[in-house]
Length: 215
Ligand code: HEM
Image 1 (cartoon, helix red, strand yellow):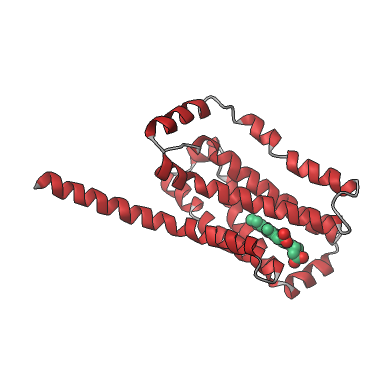
Image 2: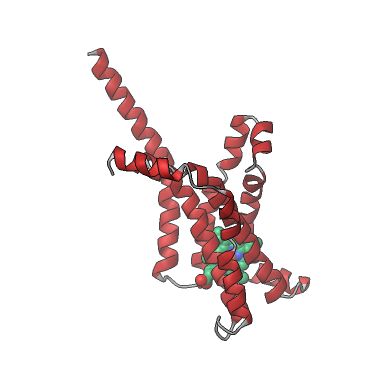
């Protein structure tokens, strides 16, 4: 993409307000709930709702991790929207968990305990949520001001193991090798690998241009 196209797009994106995203972001959840209540989600509406919410959470989460590579590779900046996308991903994870706890298992704690022991992929999902809780909690202006930049960065590094584990949770939950979960896990691994690779590449390019200037 040429720099002019990217800068025109960025100019337009800068004028897009962010707050409506926090309302519009819940439209898919409301739609799936409506479908579930009106028989539009098939024979097992609770399972279907759980799956839709989990998949959308993963898609949003990976989309939030794509923002930086997109900026590096195309100059298109969605940085202003990254917090919105990441927080919406976290809210969808909470909805996914709530459907499992409340609608699926009806808060039967004994059953919940047995499920956790019997199905380790659910524990993996829980770990993802626990890893991302401090990230979500520090994704507000007050926390950014209060925390040292280095601490804030360290907390946000948790998104990388969480991305891999989220991909594993999905693949494990479906118990076979369909293309979709394999694709999400591959994307998660690629996004995690991108960071050190890009850093090494930038360092090498800088060293080369310093050598050229010195010569
Ligand atoms: C406490 C946390 C979590 C719990 C208890 C949980 C539970 C579940 C359950 C019960 C299923 C259905 C499969 C099955 O019946 O075994 C499932 C599937 C799934 N979960 Fe989670 N999950 C959690 C966290 C997450 C997170 C953090 C994500 C995304 C980032 C996620 C994404 C998915 C996806 C994509 C599926 C598969 C949906 C499909 O079959 O199409 N889950 N999860």
